Amino acid sequence: MEPVNVVHIAASGFMDVQQDWLSMSLNTTKEGTDAATVQNQLKVALDAALGVAKAAAQPQLLEVRTGQFTLYPRYSSAGKISGWQGTTELVLEGRDFARISTTAGKIQTLTMGNVGFSLSRQAQQKLESDVQALAIERFKARATEVAKGFGFAGYALRELSISSADQGGGQPVPRVMAMQAKAAMSDAPVSVEAGKSMVNVTVSGSIQLR
Image (tube, rainbow, N blue to C red; front, side):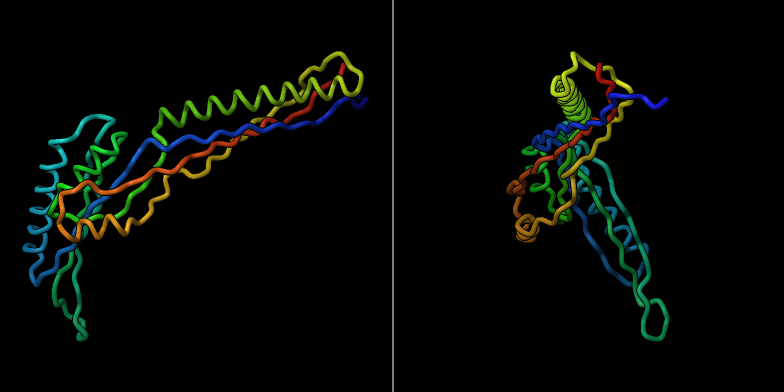
C-alpha cells in the first residue's frame, strides 16, 4: 500500500563571507645559450627572493613555498638547439594580506604573476556548518508550515538529502597594477583586494503529515 499524506519539500540557505586567504605568485624567466648558466641565474633569483620571504614568514599569516621550475631548449629554424629558457616561481600565501603584499613589494628578483583569493580551511568549514544549520532550520519551518496548512498537527521525516555548492572560491586573477608596480622595481606594498565566497546548501526530502 502506497503511503498517504506524504509531501516532498525543499529549503535552501546561503551565506557569503569575505575571503580570508591570499595566494600570490612571483616569477622570473631567464634565457641564455648555456643550460647551466640559465639554471644558475634562476637559482640565484629564487634564493634571493626566498631570503626576503622567509624573513617575514609566519605560520598561517605568511607561508612560503616554491612553485614551478622549468628549463627547456629553444630550437633554430634548422631544428638545432639555439638556446635555453627557464622559469622559476615563488608563492606567498596566508591570512595577513598586508604582510604578504609588503613582502612581495620588497622582492626585487621576481615579478608579479597571479593573485588569488579564497577561504582558509577553517573559514570554509565554519561557513559550510553555519549554512547547513540555516538550511535545516528553514526546512523544519517549511515542514511545519506545510503540515499546518493541510490541517495536521505535525510531521515525521521520511527521507532527507543535503547538497551544497560553493561560489567565488579563489579564482586567480591577473593584477595589472601590481605588475606595473613591480616593473618599476618599487618596494612599495602590492595593492590587493579580496572578494567574497558564498556557500549555498539545499535540504530536500519527504515528510509524513500526521
